[in-house]
Image (cartoon, rainbow, N blue to C red; front, side, top):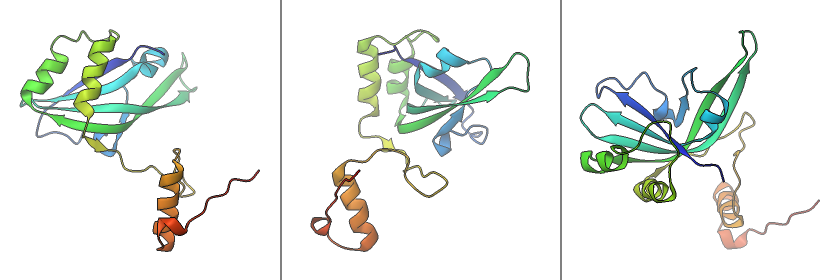
Length: 161
């Protein structure tokens, strides 16, 4: 498994309109390319008041820009979960982290523990209106039962093909 890194962002508390993290997506700056982009596993948004928001990256979407020389990639990160952190928790997580370095196992576990009981990203749908992530049988039965307004016990899923 590839070692993960943290992408740090600092925002003024009153000015959150300049970033897309609120929509569970974040477009990376031009200077972060290819392997550096793919190694980002967490986004740490620190606010002026010392609090922070920690996001876990689930997907890395790449768009190749060919009309520029040299060609470059435009990266968008899709977040899977987040958690607000108070000043103490934020500083204990990020104060000793050196930007651009890989997280060791201990530090990565601390980030995962910080995300426990946090908010989950809403389900993402593609253009056809279908969820574009995998589901367990239990989740699929619940979704079908909800759609048809029946009990999940009444649903049978059969895979053919």
